Image (tube, rainbow, N blue to C red; front, side, top):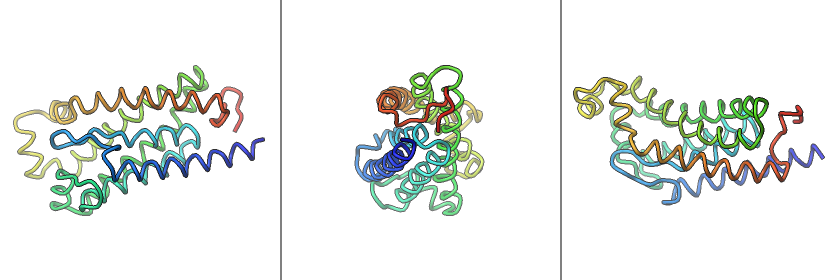
Length: 207
C-alpha cells in the first residue's frame, strides 16, 4: 500500500511539473498587471509540497523559477520587468528567479508537516496554500532588494519611500490576489488528495 502511495505521489509530482510548464508559457499562469504579474504558478509548488514534502516542493519550485527566468530572456510569455533586470545583471536575475522559489517549496513541505500535526491535514492544506503565496512574495521581494535595491531602476521606482513601504506598494493588490487564490485552490486540491490518501498522514506518522 505504501509503495502504491509513493508511486502515486511521484506521478502527481510529474503531472504538477507538466501543469506548471503549461501555465508558465500560456496566460493560464500569469495575469499581468503593471510591472509585475499576478502569479498562479505557485499553486502547483504548494500541492507538490503537500504530496512530496520539502524535496518535492523544492523540485517543483525550481521548475517554477526556471520558467520565470526563461521569461526574462523572451522565452514564453515576456516579462518586461524581468528583461530589464536581466539587462542590468544576468547572474543576479538567475538567482532572483530561481532561489526564492526553491526556498518557498522547501519550507512549504515543513509548514504542511507541522500544521498537520497541530491541527489536521485539511487545515494544513489551506495554510500551506496561503504560505505559498506569502513566502513567494516575501522571498522574491527580499531578494530583489538585496540584489537590485541599489540599481537606478529600483531607486527610481522606489522614490522617497522607505524599503518596507516600497515593497508593500510594489506588490500591492497582486500579492493579496495571489494569497486568496493560492489558499482556496491549494486547500481544495489538498482536501481531495487527503481523501484519496495521496498526502502523508503526519498525525499518525505515516509516510
